[in-house]
Length: 276
Ligand code: KIV
Image (cartoon, rainbow, N blue to C red):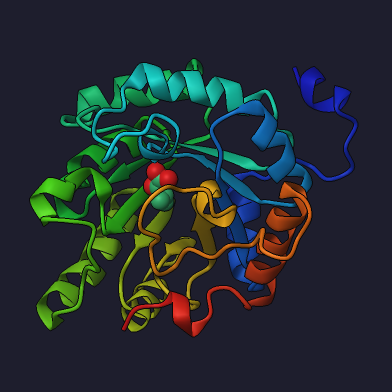
């Protein structure tokens, strides 16, 4: 059953949801990054990354679209399969793309595809309170779920751009409640994107599940960045939280290793990467 894992003959066991929960309990930061193919998956695995997200950001950084909206289920499965071939230790999380989880039944069918065909260990979906019924249904089906709140890129046209979320008192209160409700509905991880540091800290304290931040400050259980931002090869304007870890280093592996070390030590994110 585990032959492909054993054949890689590595000392450390693969990361599971229990590992991530234990890391939160131990106060060890979870180092996460995106990847979309086997070669980069091998490099990020060797660099000590704990969790790899096959993100629908592939629509922007791999396919060259302006947003993540054009990404299809078939794209996600293709990139999950490619990424998995290069991975041994990291936990594999995959995005449900735009409009692939509009109803509980559609969400379950597409999550099953990501897990059965793409071999993902967990699916990620965007949105707060409106997704509670979907999350409840997936949890009842024993599908592990990461709930992504704050800046949700699939809603870019509704939000009016890629901007910081939760700055008003009312929006912040709503987001804390959404995180609590998502956890009660069955979410196993809450991912926080582009929100003020103090709000992310409050949400992290309000839920028992691990929180992963991107542009959410240091007071969360783990950090995630888009691989191409770590290597400074994303075209166009850089988000505030992006950091070029390749600068001053002579290989991609060393850059990703430096990112992992910076997350683990708390050196990343620094104040210049955070929002108030
Ligand atoms: O698609 C993606 O890469 C993401 C991260 C930015 C968290 O959702």
